[in-house]
Image (spheres, helix red, strand yellow):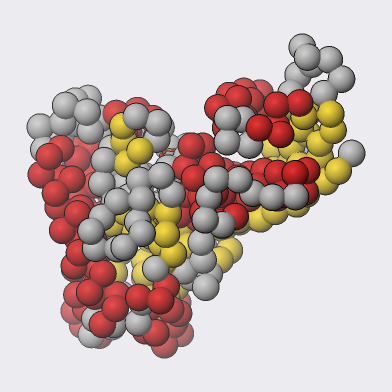
Length: 339
Ligand code: DP6
């Protein structure tokens, strides 16, 4: 049996992807920062299928059988065999594990699907000696990762990437992400992300249901327009190193995402009282110190605090003295950009 091992990390969206259509195509472009410490490692061992009715994929997640995830992977493999035809006659034994605790409430589909896509592209290269149909390996990996989970398309790249067609970034596409680091000022290249675990519960709203809430949402058209405008604004901000303007766009995006959930049918309130306690402390701390830190949220109660490295010492001290009381079992994760 041949073996490949690949790792990939999670990412935090600055402009959010919320709403999709067709085969995992986004309703609006999104921009994210890839993280360093929240990693999934995937190993794939493969051999020729012996019988055509043999089970094609087996999965161990964190060393244990996980039938739901295994089924999802098997469907995914079926779906992408069109793009990686060599998979047709292979049996894959997959093992996947995360560097972050399963109960941390951290979304893992981005890192899991991007690590899996990177492994499959390497497998294609080793089996056929080439990567077919794309500009390069990473572009194809991002395309494949997207079919597994939209946000995973962005995790293929280090630093900042955009996924979704926008006139703001030449070469951007709904089908794969694009690295944009050459258009990002140095001040944004050492950012940290303190992930405050307000709730370690599994997500209340799964991603498929979540995105579908944007179908027939009364504010959908305006939201997609707003995201597009925020991409245009964030592009200039990232380029010119305007840290205070960054805080405005990033916080507004997080609140818009949650506003969409609160006004959908059915509606969801995913923030918890401690989410709001932390948000309020972040805004007061910024006001008092002038440090350009800000918060963002994904589709849950946890708060990501984004800040430049120069302020790390004072911010970590402040988190420990003022914010850990709002975290579940005092848990928070000290992460940073991977670039
Ligand atoms: C709120 O990528 O998890 O984190 O494509 O259905 O797998 P699927 O959804 P997923 O959605 C992420 C939504 C988000 C915002 C973002 O990461 O852009």
